[in-house]
Image (cartoon, rainbow, N blue to C red; front, side):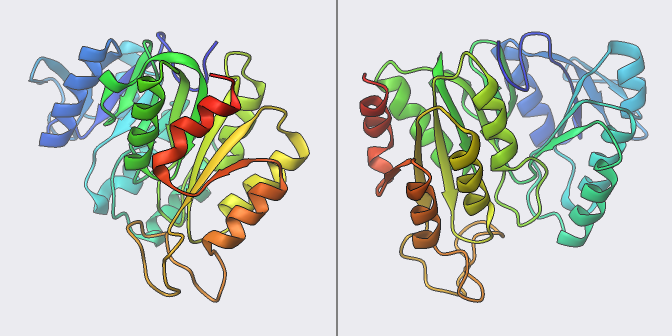
Length: 290
């Protein structure tokens, strides 16, 4: 069993005729993911680098049974692309695009609430179930199948912890990048719930960062519901208030959203905290007895 994506996932790439979309569509296909083609309005009926192109997501769903949309559409149109995929009843929408205006995301999130679609991202690396399907921009070769679920706001640190785990022969069940924007689709709580219910996931690696309250909400859920061991790292432990650190959502505002607050909440919930990213893999190995 796996969460979110597996060998049956059929992906349509929105923005496939752009350089990024075409490149990563090919990399996902090389990994073994079923990529049915792409969408670029006005270019339907053509092919691009071997992939068929449709004008709309609905056409890709009707033609090829696409059940996942991977979005590389530029920021100004990305929210509309998210809503188009949801309107076509695509169950999973993965948006890689960075820099989408917050107002657009609020509008898209409100629209999604009236649909059955789940959004991963935006501003994220995507999701991968190792040796089954890769939907995003992560380097597939560093992953291996195994018992540790990974959920992170940081793409780079996802790759870092996966590299450390794989280097210790510890595989991953699924890795989910939820993105670093202040408004996103799927939360830590959403993914933790999936991992908690997944029999193939024995332990969870959670990587948060300063800004917002997502980690505190996750801590409350962990304390109440999660029965599996969790190792957690929070980025931005030395960040000054008011200074944005990398992601649009990584900013301490009004004295809230500090790393110390988040670390205390998670520790109180029973998670094992890591102070340096260099220790993430070693700590998880110790926690699961490897």
